[in-house]
Length: 82
Length: 473
Image 1 (cartoon, rainbow over the protein chains, first blue to last red):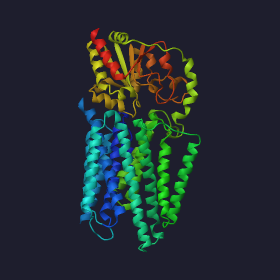
Image 2: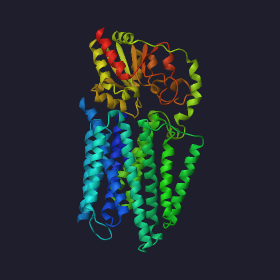
Image 3: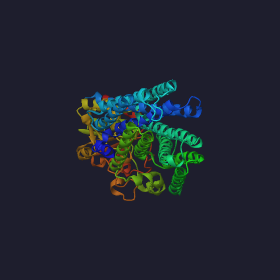
């Protein structure tokens, strides 16, 4: 997987560094899945786990959704003049 | 059966991440790539919610209201923030989202450890048997919280809310803090019952994250954010190990590797090594160069109408946009000026330095927003070939990327960085708000050269006035 990562980015024009970083940023938002699993398995009475897990889900989603939307907005601007 | 479908979902998601990232590195397919990855993420998340079953009990996940509540809140805030943010503030937004991901990873570690230590106390598992899990938890915690704290500082810095801050021995202190955190982590792995240590590690990692980013200058921020981005990727991969979750593992490692490579690429664009960025921060050399500024000679100012005149009668004008253009939101006026000049038969092009602005590609995004045609944007090498045929170079709020010291002054902190060789042109007009040095904190000899004249003022205001003046000629 490390090699795939390196292969994937091998030759990228500097123009795309920012969107690429932003896109990768959104992808590591997969941590949210871990947060969801925590939430799903937490016992009803374990408030600490529930609250922390809830926070983790919110933050993770923020990362995912925000990341993809920002990237899309950046790329939208590249598209327009074509 | 449910589990198999979930495995398939994860497989699909992993493939979309790889393809998406691949497509993101090509201008033509970038947007679709992003959407593809987002789609894959959706599948992975929904799949987890509805199909995930616990290894031990085979039960589905519960607490749906909480999960959906969290997704909804995060989704709404994320969308709004991402839609509202100005194009110029994009870099800090990315940094902030990155921090959120890091915090998420750190929180997972905290909760999982709490879960684990309860099981140890209850005698469900022995301390020795959970050591590998604790190792992963500790790694996720350290990396996640460093990424969170670092990203928040980077966000504040780009926002202008946090200023550079460094003191002597800071690098050593940082190393000590990191070493203590790692030692505490190692001890916790050795003896998982010492749960207090977890919070010690959390605290130290946060402090380390703050101190680590504090002294790094604004010009290097993109590199730092990219690095922190790959950190969060690794933290996510730790989560993947923890839950034996393929998609977290794939996504995390993918971003970790890609992020690291991207960081190195960015360093190359600035001709600096990663170590150099992290330790030899620009800020530290401020005092050394400031003394030399007084004997650089006199600067020459140019009036608006003169500048307009020079440009209208030029054959070829090259515009060099920089951060000043970005803060002033002047990209549209800039395009306006370009059109007016073209109507007068002047050839107008833009020279884009790879690290102009606050992030690589920042200027391209901004100018694209203002509908500047793609062909008019020249990359550094092409631009450098064309400067000698230019009559006028108009520099808009760029500084370090046109500083000749990078070429001819080995003592300069930016020595070796490739620059736009604007001094090859016949005339150089520099628009800046003041004589304040750029982010590298050094004087620019270019401003004192006889062929250079200064046009002080806010980029937007100056460009608007220029437009009016040029029209009137």
